[in-house]
Image (cartoon, rainbow, N blue to C red):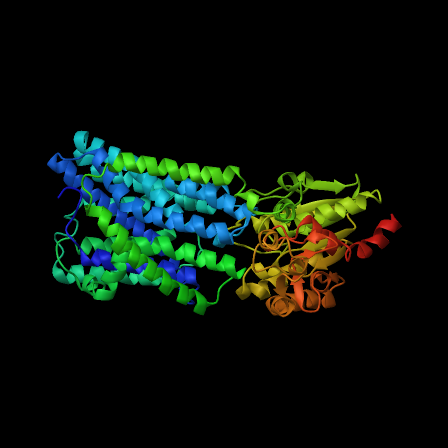
Length: 636
């Protein structure tokens, strides 16, 4: 039958590996740093299968673009509709108005196969953390479908006019896409992760295998067995060792799991292989069959549980939930997927698909324009939810997002005209700078803000996500030490967020920064680690708006905060003891005996997201900093 290929158990096994690695990674399984590469395995499989079908149809003269899209709709839409419907219903009960609005937008975008663009455009500090977006995982579906809008047309054209150039053309496209991915990664650009032109090489690698079925025709059975085992080894090493925190990803690193997948598929094109047999047992076939539905279900199940829990899940809880996700996936596979893939032959798939897409887009749009069905909540709830906008209004102008190196002279002065105080740090210093500037303005003084995202004021600090941080810190330090007007430097950063395995380097680099400032005659105030929350405070508090007692009792336990920040509080204290730096510890300022609350009735919501203080929170903390600044200000 046109549009279908002979069953290959090894490919089902690869699907099982792909989906189980993603599920385990998202559930928090330890030792599986690279579990997310399951998506890359899926891309290669998809590129191979779709290209194989298209080439078969082009060769037989039965190719139809309409038929191709009908099959894609049959394959993807029914299960997706079930999961989207369930997600929207769950959101009505578990999400704040702001989060429900985002769900409405992303559900519409998901049905329009453009959610990757939404996540690319909103991948910044403003908004709840990515782990709390119920449809975040749909970005990969969007990448595939955007690829398949263009690729069938390209393939048909090349097949008709330049058939002999198909493989060279695919190789050129692989090289261009890989180059875009590597360059985007080096520039810390989120488009390299989310958008199709920097991901296309993964699908195209699968397409290359389909275009060259004779690739291993001269390789004997022993060689094919060896290649299939090598492919599985590459996949296994990728799952265990690839770390997106310390490696450029996708880029060239993603070639490891992709080439591993290519080897398994290519080796098994005309014969069974040893590697293929290893991944063809009943458990692999079971999860391979469920792979699409399980991929769809696992993430919303985890995310809505986190919303219900107001924070992260334990591995045990997540594991139990994933058993539930498997059950949902099986029901969806048996009751929905299988029925629609080959059933209902008279169904007007395109018309019904377009109507369904339009319906969901309209529903998502309605949810978005009504502010996440905000009528569900009181005026007090809206006020609390709006704390997600209570950040430095000068952030866009004064806070530096990274990328190139910003000169000291281009940094902002807030408050009064003359700045004798500077705030130097990462994004956690932006609200503090604004609040202090506001308070210093009343004394006729100003403050210079030198804050850069994900770049702590630690000399020698390097991150693959912020490759220019070390150079930026040199420029900032040189500017501060050379500026005679600056008499006090406040240093602030979420030190605990820069790698538990790099504490010695962070301590050494921070101490070096302090000493350089002191040699230049500056007073240094070190702000200790700032308590963060397990969940988005504006969202959580807006759901408790009508219970004053619940507002004040919501937050993270002080014991948990102190355990989390202990090493870094000790680090700051030790630096202070060996230098002349003054320490302001935010923990006793922001926390009471038992709790580090997200709300203070005297100030309001203290955070605009999980980890960043709001203007209200910065105002509360600044009360402990101002007394340290007064002697120098009065001396002026």
